[in-house]
Amino acid sequence: MVEATELRVAGEAALSAEDQRRLEQMLQYIRAQAETFIGYPCNGYFDYSALHEFLKYPVNNVGDPFAPCTYRVHTREIEREVLAWFAELTHIPPSDYWGYVTNGGTEGNIYGLFLARELFPQGLVYYSEDTHYSVAKNLRVLNMKHIMIRSQPNGEIDYDDLYETIRIHRDVPPIIFANIGTTMTEAIDDIVRIRKILSDLAIPESYIHCDAALSGMTLPFIDGAPLYDFRAGIDSISISGHKFIGSPMPCGIVLAKKRYVERIARSIEYIGTLDTTLTGSRNGIAPLILWYAIRTRGADGFRREVADCLEKARYAVERFRARGIEAWRNPFAVTVVFPRPPEVVLEKWQIAVHRNRAHIITMQTVRREQIDAVIDDVVASCEAAAGPAEIKG
Image 1 (cartoon, helix red, strand yellow):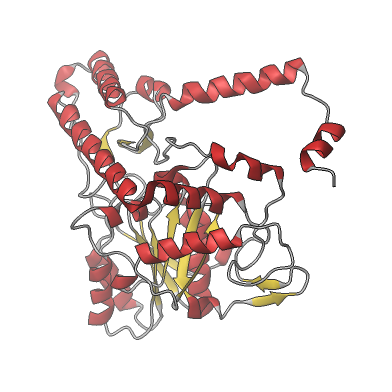
Image 2 (cartoon, rainbow, N blue to C red):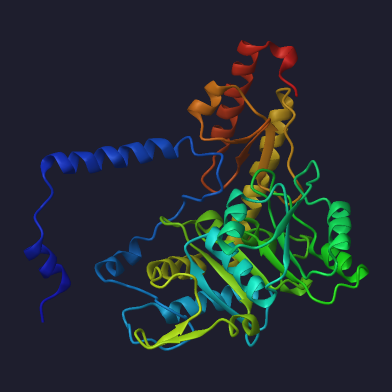
């Protein structure tokens, strides 16, 4: 039998010297950009070289990870182990959940909304103005009716506005899109309080989806963190894999109550399995990456990493304030918010901004010397632009 590597050597020419230079230049570019990558929630601190051999095969987890499939070059067994770990993390019994490894948080969110729409075709989606930009697009794709709710100054949903808006439309099943860590301030919507609103209004039917892209991997390892998972009465949740865990490719997981997924399942003869996911072909390498991270780092390792990230966030707030800049963070957050700096800082550092706010996120790869350097640049640029007396704001 001819090995796959032999086929490639026989069928492919080597890269030209010019193309090889292009690859090297791209690698150098990425390495350089990684040094200023401080404003986005992605962990680049990983080594998956042990999995390189899997890249020699067309690994495809097409279809339902819990059903047999005639396409057998897959990692579905590994995927199920990953999902079981996340199910335990989010406190949903093994007999009650279904899920799959996604291409990232947006896919997980649109899947949760899709299930809600199939359950309540006339439902009305409520989400805060601090919700991730992709959600409005998801709602357009799904053609779901929706109402945006005001946010509080910290980014958390305005519960009074939510109450009044649901009250006005109480004849329509509410679909709540809750943020467990908003994009700019990592604010956490209070699921227990939202459930109480639904109870106080005597709402008989509802659906709650949680976008826990980053915080879904930090809150479980923080003592005293708010209740946000299936214990609080949610129906589905999306968690990113490339954010806190870290991955060379975007990925994530979505979990939902199994009985909802059974409503949409369709049997497909061509692949000999059930069609229950959003995409047909699915990344079979991503489950390996998540599995490897879980097995090598474990709950204790993640807990240590979370503690270190939180300590760096506290350090950043203290250092900003010591230099006269009004930085702050939400409880349990690794996101540090401060006034939008001059453009010269944004050109040097990859810092996320929205209107008058900016933030850095103290992920595993962010070092204290980087935090200090950012603060030095912010102070210097503000002094150059307006003078020390106007740094605050």
